[in-house]
Length: 343
Image (cartoon, rainbow, N blue to C red; front, side):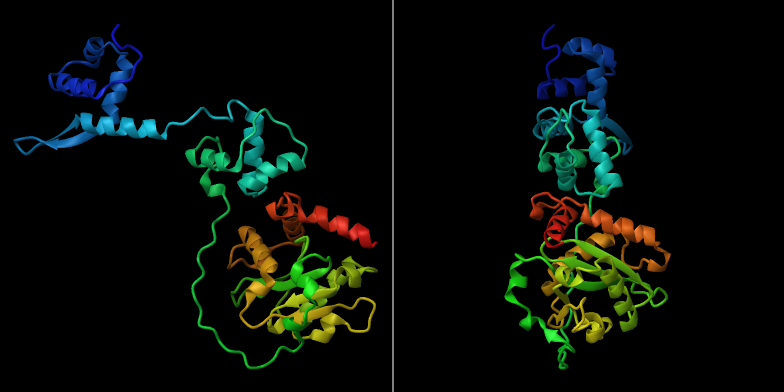
């Protein structure tokens, strides 16, 4: 039987070219090379090239050199068997977490342990990314992965000569920088950017646990900001000053009613600190979480069309997202632990 069931050699491919040129059928070629006839059919499809004949006509023919090159390329790309095997339950769980719950592959894997799931299959993050890129999953493709951030274009820095209306971040306690104590927040607004869509989200991020709080506002005025912040106060009635020791904001006009936001001397008072102009990195946690919001509501989204239920779902999604920097715990888990400690 010769080399039946073995791979074709480069010499075999040149024989195939000569036999095809002599008008031999695939069956005849297979018999001569002692291979299955389907091997010849596959080989013919592997590398077809258009040649120009002496009479200036064109003809599509089998190219043995190209076929050999593609064979070698496939050998290089070939790896071990798929670890996912026939574990359909594992595949469906991963697809659900990434497609429906919008988790990253790493977070999807971490959620297996968080939810107490067990599967026959166990793979690492790198392998999961590789499977997605190779199209191993039935429904999951690279289009479902979180969008990588684009490099921000450079802006000409404008020097702001006026000082902040409240205290500068330079006066903020050093313990806030270390992220070792609970109750220090960063606050920002997320908005459409379109003049026809003034509705805005007031977003707060706790620096230690990365807990996210979101309130919808009709616009970015100081009055609306104070009202939204007071709704946050109502959520934590009786312990607000313990949970909100400091709040760091940028120099946006919506945060200029310092007294209305701080309520100095009252039971539910807090302390505001203002970042340096054009230094969003001083609210790094806030900025990172804003990107998570943009996964669901890209720039240009009209928040007028976003319902309170959708806002609550978005807040819950962020707070229940497994995070590597938290040891693959969620913000909500840690936040509730610290909250229980001060109640």
